[in-house]
Structures are given as C-alpha cells and as structure tokens.
Image 1 (cartoon, one colour):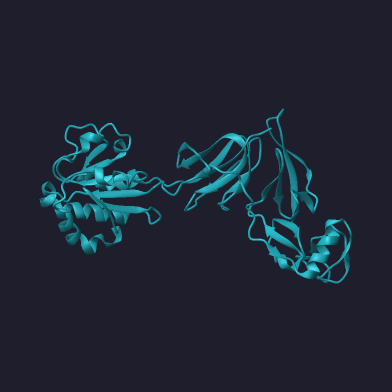
Image 2 (image 1 turned 30 degrees about the vertical axis):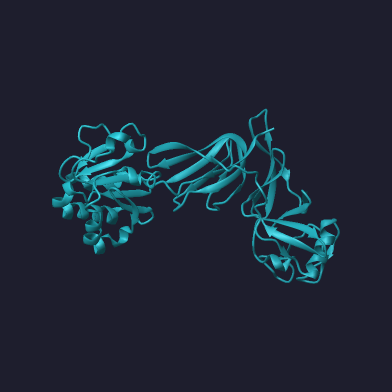
Length: 357
C-alpha cells in the first residue's frame, strides 16, 4: 500500500529581500550615498517581492516605501546606535539580506561561522564592513547595478512529484495535474507558488525551475491528518431532495427543469433546446467538477470538491476530465497509476455520494 501524506510548499518567503542600512558614526559622511543606494535598489526590485528595511543595531522594521520622505529623520534616530548586526538577525531569517554602509560591523565576528550570515551581501560605500573576516560577500557600491538580478531570480514553474505520487487535494487551484509514466502537479508563472497538498506517494519534493536552472525543495510535513476539504455544505431544495433520493437508488425521476422523466444517472437536462444542458439540481448552478452529497436529518447537503482529483479508496482516486471521471489505481508491478474504468454517478464514498458534472 502506498504511503499517504499532507505537506506544505511555502514559497512566500522565496524572493523576500531585507535591506539593512548603516547609520553609525563611520558612515556619516556617506549618508547620501547610502540612502541613494537603498532607494534605487527598492525601486528596481519587482513589486511582487516582500521588501523589508532595517538599520544596524535596531530590530524595528521601517516602511521601505517611505524611505525617501523620512530618510533624514530615520538616519538621525539611528545614528547613535552603533554597528551591530545581532539585534536584527532573527527578523531576517527567511530573507536575502543586503547591508549597505561604511566601516566595520563590530559583532560580525561572532557570526562568521553562521550559515545565515554566509548568504549576506555587504555593500561598502566607504570603508569595508567585513574587514578581514570571511563572511558572506562584499562588493563596492559601484557594483550595485547588478544587485537586483543577484537578489531575485524569477521562478518560471514548480513541479511537485515523487515515487508513486498522486495528489487528491491541493489548496492552490492554479496547479494542474499531469499524468503519464509519472504523475506530478505543475504551476507556471504564478505570483505565489505556495500550496498544501494531500497525496499518495513517497519522497515527494518540489522542483523549482528558473530559466535554465532548477533546484529541489523539500515540502514541510503538515503535522495532521487530511480532513474534509470540500467547500461549505449547502442544502438542496425540498424538490431536489426528492430527485436525489430516487436517483441515488438508481430509480428514474421527474426532472425539475423540463418536467419529463429522466434515468437515474442523468445530471444535465438537454430537453427543450438546452444546448449546453441545465443541471437537474438547479442549486448547483453552472459549476463543473466533483460534487459530494450527504444525507442528514430532514434534508440532503451538497459540497463542491475544489480540484479535479479525489481519493475514493486505498491507492485509488477518481480524476475528472470534463463531465466524466475515470478511476485510477496504483499498480505496484508497473510502478505507476493506471486507469480502471469510468466512475459511475452516485458513487458511494464514506457515507457520501460522489458525482461529476
């Protein structure tokens, strides 16, 4: 039996940039150059990136969009603080960090073996910020034109897959399932590639593709079992309940749209020149895809499944394509998912009934 899991791909922090300015005594004569460098950097970074602004020795985050207006005020407030990086390190853990200034950062030696500091970019406007220490990378302010491309690399697409992988829920509906010898989810040209995925499979990872480069990223375990991911449950009308009770038992019913008798499996009415068809349950509207029904005292509730794949058993899913759904089951001998026939309407599923419209 395949393993099951629920995991999170958190892409929101990728591309976040923090700019840390030096307003200490050694940087006073370079104030205008430091501020100009920071303002130009913020202007050149894409709008979708989360940008943060700090001053050395100050854990308070400043609003980067107001830097031009409050440059003199903020500089004065931070000019007596000294050159220390420690107070802000915990606030920039998931960021790419640029420190702009002049003169040594006094506590940098304490962090020279830190993996976090090794990814910092130091921009010296006057004297070196790092001195003889081998930490991060230091460049001269004359090289700042290349900073945006070094800090930000646009992600073209993300593929999520693994051994025996088959998702049956994902929170980011812009991902699409690709079937073949291997199954995987793919998102392309998205503002946010983050998603939570419930799946069959093992060693599931994300492949992040940027231009001609790609890298793997681990998914974070969700830490809980996958619950019910359908949208809010709503009640059918009394007339629709009567249709459901007959259809679910395989009996013909009188259509609420045309008034004629339909077979139990009918989900859309094409009588009276309804070229595109009308749902026999008007409450469903024009929504396509999987719909779950469940009987409760006095009525029947329905809910839309948010994606086109749903788990229907151990190592078994249904995949909706258009108004039909096919059952797929994992074949251990072939090491892949294979089609096992058509999903019939009102498929019984853990006390519910599944249809696809």
